[in-house]
Length: 227
Ligand code: C5P
Image: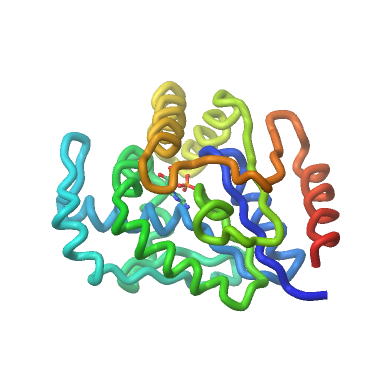
């Protein structure tokens, strides 16, 4: 039985990364959170004042793309890889609501996507990988052996994200999180380059009500059919 590529796409906070991490652990595969990469580029753009709530200087950002080095370093204690931006651990910083509010603007820039897609394809060249994002089954790995498309109600998703942020001690209100989740989905689905859309051959999972264990079992049997 050979190694495969598992592509997981879907709207924000549908539990993609939870299921992806679990699959990678079970299969001894690499897990890549591509959202973390777009978030890290956004953080870089914020720090250099290329983007804010009311402006985006895409030209400056594009000119500096070669100065952005992204790397994942496995943290054995956490059991997953953390995101590093120019050798600094930014795992915590990239999850803030400030980054969430700007990331969809930055990820709509074609040159940004081109750079990250190339790096992602490179990480998957030996297969044995679980990758989650918005364009994995459509653009990054159109030939992935297994494609999943995750959905859940906006309220379920916002509640999930809200709890995550509160648990980390961030000051946010529910309305703000709900708005951000819906706004990102809107921008991500309507952008010109690689809009979020279900690949024809992706299998859809609505996990509004489905338990994680049931979902995991069902996905593992799909994986075993394809190995
Ligand atoms: O997955 P996560 O919610 O962390 O992704 C953050 C943002 O990064 C998304 O809202 C989207 O704008 C962008 N993204 C993307 N393509 C991917 C992964 C994420 O455009 N493959």
